[in-house]
Length: 230
Image 1 (cartoon, rainbow, N blue to C red):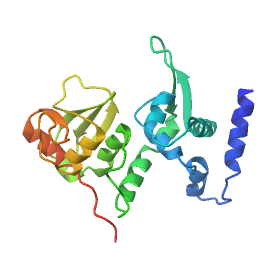
Image 2: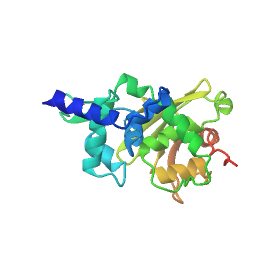
Image 3: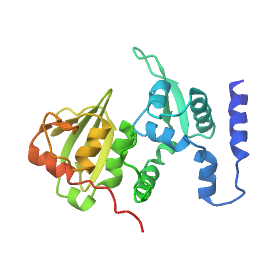
Image 4: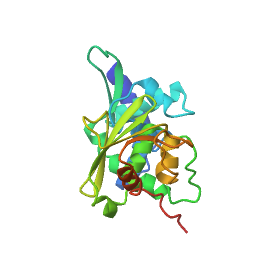
C-alpha cells in the first residue's frame, strides 16, 4: 500500500511536467509547488519533526504540509525516519541529493533580496535567519576573521563558524565559542543587518551577546543586505 501511494504521488508530480528537457524545468516539477522550497529550507540544518516544520511556516495547513512532504519524499528529496530512544519520534530530513540544493536556496535568497519588494521585517524562521548569514557574508572581509559564534534562538541553537573567508552553519552548540548571541530572529536582523547599537543585555530589541565587543562588531560587519536592483 505504501509503495502504491508513493507511486501515485510521483505520478501526480509528473502531471505538472513542462515537456522541456531543461534541468530547470525538471526542478520546478519537483519543487515548484507553493511551500516546497521553504520546507526544504527548514530541513537544511538537520531533521525536524512535523510540528517544528509547521511552526516555522506560518500560514501552511497541516494537510498541505503533509501533501508537500509526501511529494518531496516521492521524488527522493525528503526522507522520514524515527529517531532512536530516548527521543523515539518521527522526523523528516533531506536526502543526500536533496541537501545538494542548499547553495541554490542560499543564492536564490540573495538574488531575491535585491528586489525592492523584499521586506526584511516579515516573519523569519531561525533556519532562514541562519541561511541569510551564508547568503550575505562579505567573503573578502571574512578572510581576516576566524571565529566560532553561537546563536541561541527560542528553542533552537546554531553555531556559525567563520574561517577561510567563508561561513559554515550547523545546529547545536560549540564546546568553547568565541562569541554568543541570544534573542529572536527580529533582534538578529536589527543587530546584524540594521546595525543597531550593541547591548550586552539586548536592550532596544537587539541580540544580547557574550564575548569581546570588538569581535562582536567585527562579526556583524561581515554582513549587509544587498543593494536593490534597478
